[in-house]
Length: 62
Image 1 (cartoon, one colour):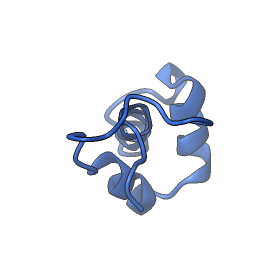
Image 2: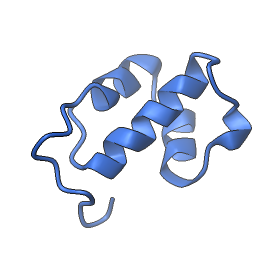
Image 3: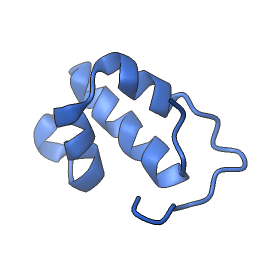
Image 4: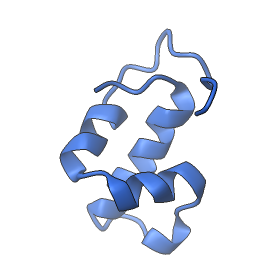
């Protein structure tokens, strides 16, 4: 499932980085922390790999 906004794509990238041990989990905040806790690495890869061109900055409820 692709990300619906740039903010969602960015949060997924941060969560994925923490899942892989590249950044500290304690550095995550908000949506990225929730994504880290609730999504698999594979799901995060799908969101994080979404092309940002044409995505809105935010989506209602995002």
